[in-house]
Image (cartoon, rainbow, N blue to C red; front, side, top):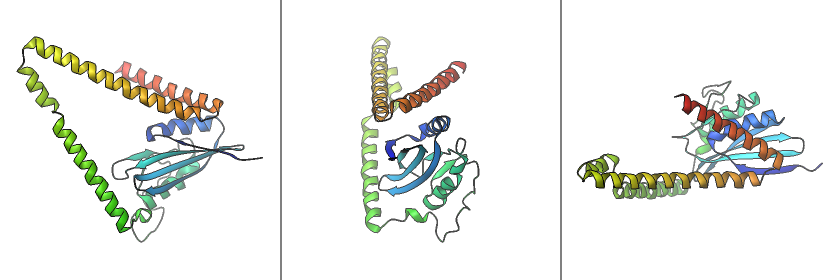
Amino acid sequence: MALHTTFAEVRADELVELAEAKKNDGYRFVQMLCVNTEEGIDALYSFMKGDSLENYTIKGIDAATQSVPSVTGSFLAAFPFENEAHDLFGLNVTNIAIDFKGGFYKVAMDKPMTVISPAQKAAREKAAKIAAAKAAKASCAKPSEEDLEKKLAGMDPEKAAKVRAAMEAKAKREAEKAQAEKQAQLEEKLAGMDPEKAAKFRAAMEAKAARESAQKGGE
């Protein structure tokens, strides 16, 4: 029997839903491992059923500002892997069912698997400076909401209303474009899956969207 292996990317906010879908579909948890990259930490999760081994990766996690949810709600066997990710990579995994609070390993240094070479450090610092410069430029080019409101307050009311309407229309178009791009990426990911698995994953995502819509409606 040949092993069929697939790889796909997943976002951190999709991970719990994915784990639930795999559990319900009869998959077992195989592993969770981390890799230290130039963009951050890649966390890979593997699930297996029969001759199918599926791998899902959350790419470029910034351990200083980002966290990932635990999958122990669906697969308790993941707790050693998630504790290891915390102790060796400094990855913040939230709501681990059995959490050693940083005491799973006794190591000589904090986050030993994130140690990088001087050349890697220089490359990261350079990339961070470029990103900061771009952000600063964008901030200067775009007026703050407070400045904009002051400017509109000084306009003729009719003209201000037209400007505001145009801005709201632009914001709506941008939001719709971003949503369309997100949906296209999801469809591309689903197209690479087995049709039956893709349908179950789509159903899980739709159920999540329905719950979020119901919560917003009740607020």
